[in-house]
Image (tube, rainbow, N blue to C red):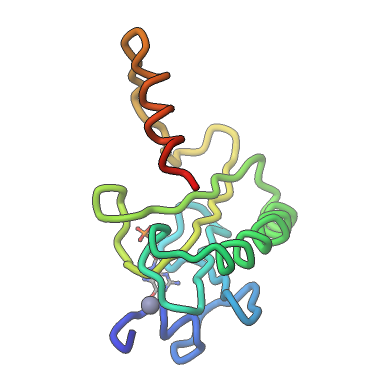
Length: 137
Ligand code: 5GP
Ligand code: ZN
């Protein structure tokens, strides 16, 4: 995608603070971090979101996640980490090229990834679970 900023960064056309690179991904520091050390893993192949991601690439990119997370934790000294990924505007995605966030977390920090909780009527969870399960091949 010629007009995609993350394609340009992932492929090295635009310089970035890179912390890891292999043939499938480039991991960079986020330009507007939730905390110092907040990184994003960009897939080198243009894929807009998780719904477009093929199984083979998924395996390759998720295999890199633990070692990147461990390195960020060691260097930042964070107490915890949120690893998350937004798909579509409704979910907060602003750059439509698949990326995974690594957000270092510290006790009593002000980063907010909490949500209000809901619930299910009697039998509703089982029914919904079955519907979804039937779609997974
Ligand atoms: P999203 O909201 O799509 O999940 O996340 C997009 C992320 O990309 C944001 O956290 C934003 O700060 C980051 N970002 C957007 N443009 C750039 C850029 O040009 N360079 C870097 N390093 N990060 C960017
Ligand atoms: Zn792209």
